[in-house]
Image 1 (cartoon, rainbow, N blue to C red):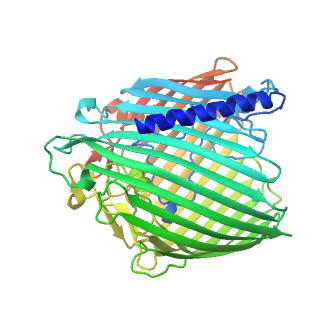
Image 2: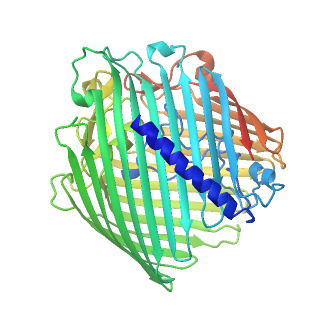
Image 3: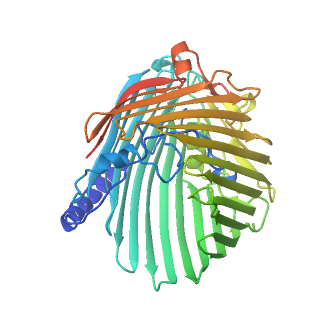
Length: 547
């Protein structure tokens, strides 16, 4: 009830801001651009360190909304998306917009995502609501615990003057996952998170500014537990409060820039589920760099102290890197080259870990994770039709602060949940991709590999290919993706997805979407990790509106 009251208060406050903003700025002209509706397979930089969160969208619904057609990475500046075509005739005096997606399908598939926003002017805002659920995987029933559902509400508002910027946000997130009859005592697990934040920036001069922020959230995990079950507290529930203030001083002139900052992090076990009830961390950081239109060179370092940084009294992460934008005669776009190296160190959050890894529960507050790392990112365009990317990362544990992740093995499995371990790891990860456009078609190929230690839920190799078709007026869009997972425990059946949408009016598109169609048609399951399976395919009809 308290969370519901907070949500209603938050929505009311932001709704008032919406009405005020509309009245004050009705005369402003704006042009809003919707997300692209073309698609291709392309991986980002390999994920290591604090970015090493697995792709979890196959098990749990997305929290950022649902697009009718997946995105296509940029191949050339000449691309014109369907949304830009739709908006070409939009009334320019309009400053507040609404858009959304709603659809349903099989097996027990429903999705809805709606938002209202202003992106222009001094005081933009955005309010979003979304829900998605799938009931029943691979001919298994909802009553047997084969389901997942997700709800999120987000609101943000910016107030700006010539010298200051105030940003406010609030968010509520909830997910519920059935445990697929793997526990005699817990039928499903719910994870709720309520968060809020504020930042205030002051620009004293064109060269000097001060940024302050305060973030906090409350994360709660709880299961539907049989009344007489004898379980440890951490198996049944977790209640964690996070608190994170930060101050950052910035100075820069003639291409030189610098930052001096301090931040504090607190994770507090409010539910008394763990043996230790708090983790504290203070980070003092400094950064120096120089840049012009073609090069950016930087170096940064920090001193970290706290009570969860392993056996160390202090940890000193640092990083040096360089970014190049190199003009070339064979493309209007520059070749982009980035290289960096150093020590990355961070304190994993309970909420981030348990939401990223399905069917897992922490039994202690996590310790600091530190890694020596080196990375290389290359992006090579050819004319406006071809893009080649290559990303590589090497990392290995530093200061004895291993990677915290669940162990999906029988020895770490108890009452339907997998528990965590901190492990020293050495990773060598690569991600190579190519995309090519010809006329209304775009083709792509991507190869993602883990050559060293394998993170939880990943496979050694994943090869993906995609095609997208979009007519010049964006009346009809079609995209399809096929992905092969290779490795000792990988499923030999490829993942096949597709989306097809048709513009029926200025404001509405209709679409048919399918995910993991081969598994859906065959009725066979696709493993997630350990004892569990994932969604194993769904298909649905969607409608997207914009006005």
